Length: 144
Image (cartoon, rainbow, N blue to C red; front, side, top):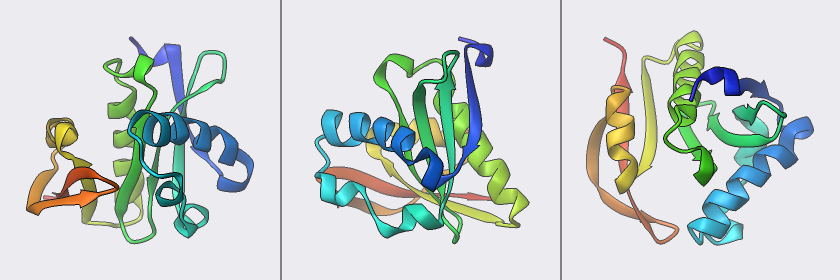
């Protein structure tokens, strides 16, 4: 699937909150059974968010960059996975991190997603840990 069938834009939490929530609710709360109270935090208002939308403007993916260089809440709707949306979102988040002079970017990857992040240059560090009942491992990207 080409990026012409979807687009990625910088989102603004107050205005785009519902679109961002829709994707995260479907992926994390409904599909992965993350308790809703663990999905939402006070950091959303402080983060830089990207929103992927289909050709009709429907939200299909999201990710956020925290002020400290952590990437999080990467989510793509099931029917859009494997079409490059997640990779495009991650690239935009990484570009934004580099613009903000982060020489290191960090994320907590679900174990099954680690190969996805490795392709983008992230490397696993530390032990496996549980987050919302899902095994994760920290991954780090360092500018060379």
